[in-house]
Amino acid sequence: MLTPDHRAAWERDGYLALPGFFTAEQVDRITAATEDAYRDPPDWLVVDNTATGRRARLADFTPAERDVRRFKLNDLYLELPEVRAVALDPRVRGILAGLMDEPVVLCNSLNFEKGSEQGDHIDSLYMTPRTPDKLVATWVALEDAHPDAGQLFYYPGSHKIPLYTFSDGTHHAIGAEMDGWRKHIFDGIAAGGLTRETFPAKKGDLFIWSANLVHGGSPIADPARTRKSLVCHYYSHADSVALGFDCVPEGGDAFWMRRAHPPLPVPPPPPAPPPAPARPFRRFVGKVLRKVGLYSLFKRPAG
Picture: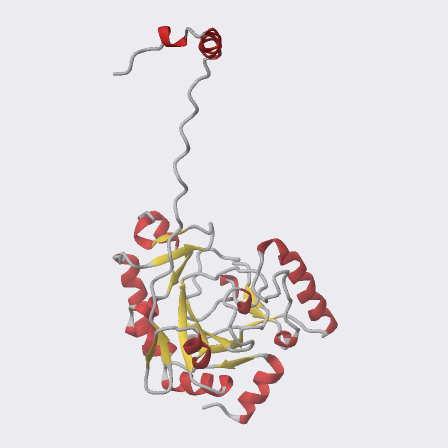
């Protein structure tokens, strides 16, 4: 349940850190399901290699590539009840509904084995909600996060920096204009005297943040270390209904979005065949014959 202290911290800092929120048994069920996916990848599981940016089915990576575990496993919540059970735990639903002032809709999940090392960003750049501030995220530690494994970092209070408006009039990221966004954000951080903090998570901890909180993943000092985690994002129910999403009820006071798995990249078309070699002399002769009216005498018969 959302308490007055939670509400005050959320409005001041843009996040809530809730230690020991989930039991070891709850997070272990997610870890076991993830391990099953690595051992026998299902055809539907689309992943992103966080080191190379390559998107593909997990089954399309070689066993050696899968062993490195630099993957973001997309939307296990669509298939695995173990993930939905944590993402839509009754206590989580209650807190998120209190922050949103309405029921929420689980709209994606991301399972990480390693730290993301993702640079400073806000989630609303890429999952821009229909209504500003109607997107929240959760981060569940599935193991203790060692400092050398690339801990989550964030800037308390950065959610109050006014949103940057791109050239199309929206707050959705345009790649060519991200330098302007970065200047805007870091000018705001400097003006507010905001400082960067890290989250020294323990297994079972829950971190909830505003979609406008600047955050990212610290560099990984020890590549051998894992930092297993589950990230989920939630839209408001009103926005989801307005956008025509298929919202499946969960427990009567929350929903999860039923949709297709993320699309795979479309392969580039095959290269066009090279043009036929030019035959300038033959064209010249044909032109002359046409001019003198003799072309039909020398034209190759059809068939």
